Image 1: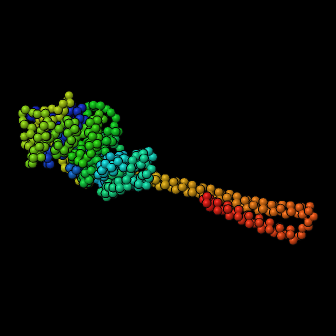
Image 2 (image 1 turned 135 degrees about the horizontal axis):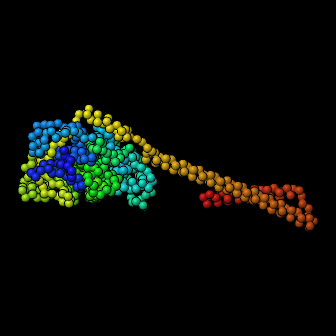
Image 3 (image 1 turned 180 degrees about the horizontal axis):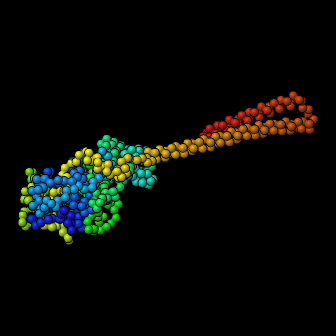
Length: 528
């Protein structure tokens, strides 16, 4: 019913049906309004329209209300009253649910959705942990070093081990990458511990989620991927950064397709203001770039927030399809927000936009979609259609049945896996370094022993030479004296010869001792 020949029937105004054109649905959109004005139902109606046209959607379910999109709706007094206003007969109604997959980062209410710390990248990890610029710089250095080493970061344990390794090897990389202060590493470790205590360790790991699984269809209908976000919402930084990671993965993975007759995927970003709170300008620029270029990949994005002012102007200007529910103007800030919201529409001469925003009833909205030329249409006051699926949450039993029915993809992601961790890589590296150091020390000792052996041999060689020289000289002297006495006719007594021989041995021994002493003292002085 909600899919027309050239678009998706969303609301009914004074001039009849109001539709989002299929080839303009990837130009992004905004659903805004105060709490309780009908934003969730509008999201459900738009998602249903895409589903029936074979366009898969991704959406975060904050309170469990969107789980009802999986079940057929039913006729109610409210719907019955609206039928004549929409020009719809009761007989033409076919209540039905959409094919749904439930996901859950924590793996409790649906299929686990994981990402590795390496895939998240240093900037997104820094945002999750709330790091300052200096600490973010250290994290970037670590990622760069690990990339060069070919080491993958899977989970929090890996990042903790890598940080510990960096703290011990920081000096080796100071010249190349800059100073890595121990205080910065300590701050990152503390932030990591805090993140782990929040349960984020269940999100990081393998198998990481394959973004292509969001593009599935079933029986010609687009599969609705519904992320259970009631628990995830308690960690706003993790929630918004995770959705930003999904968008970035879509942008980097999908091929360019240009303008299609209908989108390949529509991504609903609820509580969009969280994406831009406490976000650096560099990251905001990156978000703006992804949003601007991802439409060429066939992906449309709808931001859901209370106020248009929650969205930066540079991004708000790219949201061509607008549904604005009622706002309240109790404070000066609220009044300013109403005025800004009114100024974002192309004025309709039949009513004053600013006044209409304050007068809208539940289920009513100001609607402006892009026309065939890509220009915003004149704003219309309209009533949003009712969904054909169930409004409100489903039971735990119904959710369990749906999860069991998605057995193939459930098996794919249900159990976490382990591969060689960073800790094991660095432990092996440390073992290799220790072994190399041990071998070097042994070689040095062997060289020292060899030198000592050669030195000892040299000393005794000198001793022997000194003894031989002394004895030889003395004997020569004695022999010379004997020959001389023979020539002069003097007689040598045996006692004299004996005394001379004794003195020769004594002199030789003394000479050898003096030589040894000189060599030893010389070696000591030289440090040998």
